[in-house]
Image 1 (spheres, helix red, strand yellow):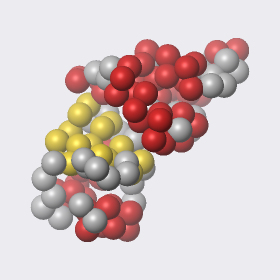
Image 2 (cartoon, one colour; image 1 turned 180 degrees about the horizontal axis):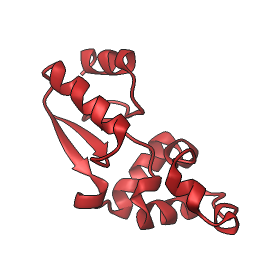
Image 3 (cartoon, one colour; image 1 turned 60 degrees about the horizontal axis):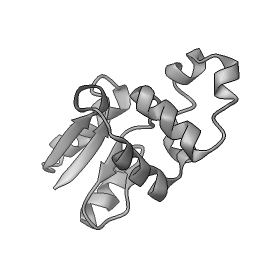
Length: 118
């Protein structure tokens, strides 16, 4: 079973979920704000993808942070602490399937390839 991680009101999440539903792909949605995220799960994401890829520095939440705080996010521990405190800082969507590399972000072709390899 696929699991998509994200935040329900995110536009990219909506597009990705619509793609999965239009292509009749069964999945479970894990909303960081509703379901939370624990440190061990986040650290597994960081171990596979790297904290730089996982930290959403293009979003509003990042831009609203004080510059001095942003300057302290220079390693996996600092990034993880921030993402645990503010799950909107986690880039999304993140699509996971057992035994398969995680897919971060969304576009039609990457989802099609991911699904065909599951």
